[in-house]
Amino acid sequence: MGNKVIIFSAPSGAGKSTVVGHLLGLHPEFEFSVSATSRQPRGAERDGVEYYFIEAEKFRSLIADDAFVEYEEVYKDRFYGTLKSEVERIWNAGHVIIFDVDVKGGYNLKKYFGDKALSILILPPSMEVLESRLRGRGTDTEEAIAERLSKAQWEIDFAHGRFDCELVNDVLEQTFRESERIVDEFLSK
Image (cartoon, rainbow, N blue to C red; front, side, top):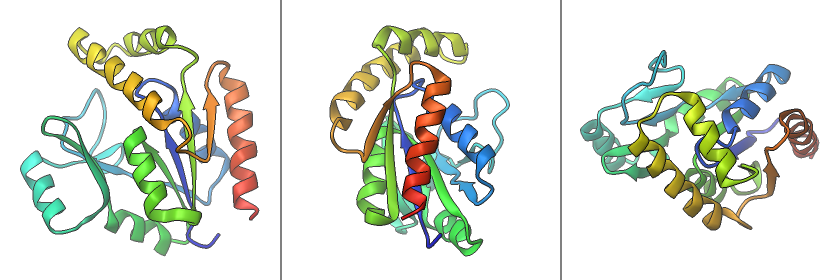
């Protein structure tokens, strides 16, 4: 596979994690890159599985030590990033890295990895559908939902034309089929 990277990005609630989970089930050679974050775990999230949970001060220290491929302070004191050690771990196992990251992170990863990477932007059919999906999770406060929706509009505006391809996640089965086709084409190169 030659150190390939597949990047899925989307505004929060657009469905990227669902699509990534589907593809991981089809491709045993894929390995999910666990991102680092300074936010608190939600629900049943576990350290080292969904994220590496790192306190903000330690995160800043790792930034100073150049330990990240990319990172972003998404909200005040809420960092997300990709550890270089995670990339090395997955490639050393001979696997293709699959990322599930926000739009800015996806853009930065594509710039970093260049032709080794396929970047796919997942979009919601509308802002109304996105709001309904975020509310349906039942994990965020009203304030957090409003913040996510505001950020989502900025991300959508920023992202257009900056990814290798864009998929509107309206009918999930169609999104699965299209993502499979795009990924298989990339892997065959």
